[in-house]
Length: 204
Image (cartoon, rainbow, N blue to C red; front, side, top):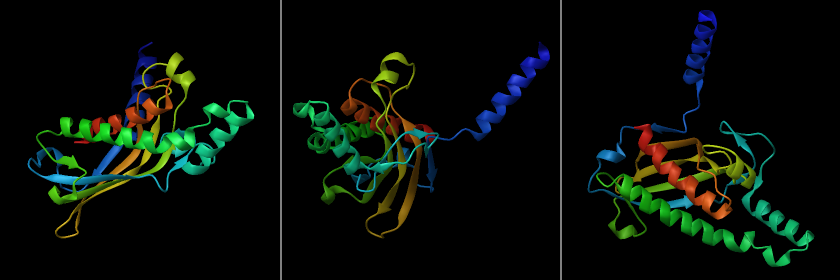
């Protein structure tokens, strides 16, 4: 029995060593300690690929976001539900809503540090979040799983640049961030961006 316990402990120790960190930071700039600084923020979804992500890696062949959304609408039409074929139409609104809630979550989490804005005139820095991979999650996992099962997953990176010098002061690698599950694609997308804020804070 003791031998089995020791073996299990060893396995857990090795697993923790090689576990993928959701977010890694590269640079000495500490967002949490930059009170009074403001960054213009944006999300770049232009290169986003969609598919199933496991440990930060696509487990199937991903497709560009525009192609994925179009296929969802085409499938609904094929199923006789053309009135529900609205993925393409809804996506701009989903992005806008998720990004605005992300900004609110960030400014609350880092209230003693760097704040985010959409107003370029008040910002001394600029941060761009590039979402390279997106797994929208699924309803089944959200309803019948536990923890973050069924939640959306993102991967990509962000660069923080000082506007005056043009120097990159911080890179945030988004290796595998998963949000809580929910029955709505829209809300899962919002929740995963909120989870990104938490993971960045935890990375410090």
